[in-house]
Length: 121
Image 1 (cartoon, helix red, strand yellow):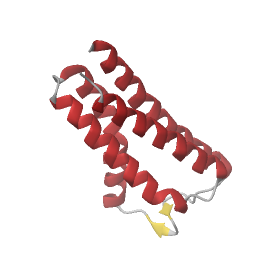
Image 2 (spheres, one colour; image 1 turned 135 degrees about the horizontal axis):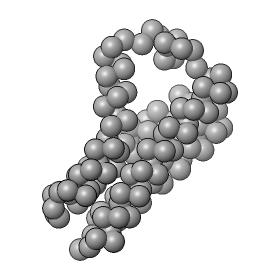
Image 3 (cartoon, helix red, strand yellow; image 1 turned 45 degrees about the horizontal axis):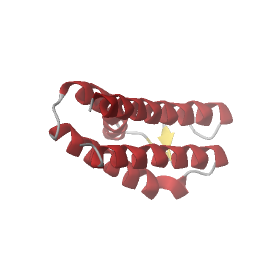
Image 4 (cartoon, helix red, strand yellow; image 1 turned 90 degrees about the vertical axis):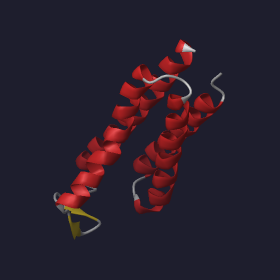
């Protein structure tokens, strides 16, 4: 059972690093305008939402190591499922091939997280 926890922690860390890699590459590629998202000025609410979304993998790492089975099993499934749907919905809004590639990798990490959590016994 501890092996599954370690695998799930690794998947959450890999997902978080994939998100950060995409953000860094977007900066270097010039595919963003500082202070704007899709041409709209960022608000404090938008920034807070972004912070909450990026915190999900970090929180899941901590909870993976501290919560007991089976509660953590369902949290993995719910959190990874939510991020899968969220990223899939936004897939078309990313123009760069590198961005779409990284989103597909992130979707695979989410799918693996759900699969490992679902089959956890």
